[in-house]
Image (cartoon, rainbow, N blue to C red; front, side, top):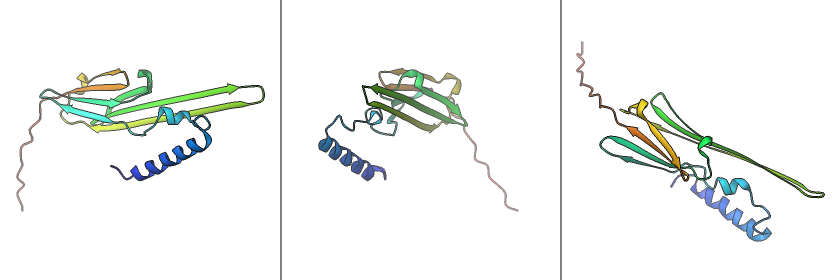
Length: 144
């Protein structure tokens, strides 16, 4: 549990109260549907030869996801934009929603050139092959 949990509960309670008072359709926001949480849930498994990272990205398309490696960090980011326009005789409704997620993971002893990724049914799977661990020898420093 993180320090934002109490605020999340209050926000959800307020939304529920407003929905009950005014009806579900009155204040239904697209961002609520697309981004119910603002964190990327991720599972990481380790085998003898690789790490396998599985990140949940529901509602995103493959084209909206970017993966890069920089300064020993694997960075996963996703960005979604949506615009809805509804016109009737004397009423115009425009709603825009924007959401982005970003998460980084420190890499050590990974073959960066052999990293593979696939996206299927809202789950991004990244396979990170291990490289040979470089053993650092202990160095004794003489005191003058």
